[in-house]
Image (cartoon, rainbow, N blue to C red):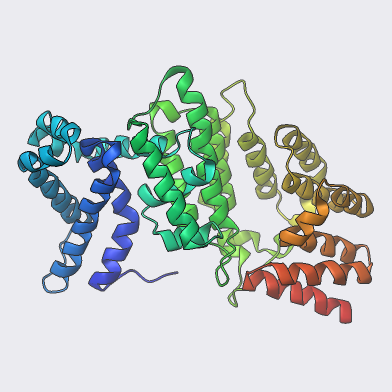
Length: 423
């Protein structure tokens, strides 16, 4: 359990992650989406002022409210200096002339903050943006991630992320994207995009490729917070939203059992199920039940049902693998991706069909490329060959996986399996 932040700098860093997105969302409603950078600058100034002030004076009882007040006052200062902005941007000046101080103050109410955040999420997830740009922009503006942090989360470099952010912001500015939640038929593709971004965000945290951190809880918690926010809004009260939130809760319930005290991976079959978070599991069941109030079955419904099967089994040996195979068959119909096929093969192996499972993986399109670039395929193949007592192929693929993964915890697990071949 991480200790609570205590120094002014630690408190500011913590609040930046949790509050900056809210502040940027509110200010962007004031200044317009085309002035996103201006809103970010105002928020940055508020946090810089906090570092300076709190280092020499008492930290306020409610630091988040203090920051919001500073940001609000800065926004009011800009409105009062609207003649200055008339010289810079006629459109911004027009907007400010129609924004009163009382309107600005109203925007900082909790209900308006929530609505502004959702508007920002939908703006960042504009379907005309490339998916990688949507993810980067959402992490930056709504979640307060810096370019270096986004690069680590998405397994790329900072220069690539800077390019994505610039490209996304330029697109929003050039195309006069409105900070709004669409309605009617326009809502459907935007919602799908929002789901995709939240799903990717959670997955980046759940199976982090960061060298020294298998689980990025901050990423997972941020995805869950945003998904909960979506589920509580009238446009987001959809079966798919509840299914995605259910999936996140069920997966997050196993956090404390996935890594031991030495930061080593604990495989599902060896996890202490009494350590699984019962409250999160019950929440997962609750949202899964809510997700059934519709006619469409989405991939999130199926993946949540798969996660629920694991939670329902009192022990690994009691898992209903026949039902799991049926669920993966359904998932493949809607999501015919190699990673789904890979997981289905793992289930087949649990049903005693190890040879068939290996054959399924080797028959995947582009399997040689997948084996050369994604460690998980080599790792699973190596493990399956280990189960089949084929030490030659097991060693080959496990060594390949060990070379490919950047995760220290993953490498340690693979090393343990390689050592078992020598015994």
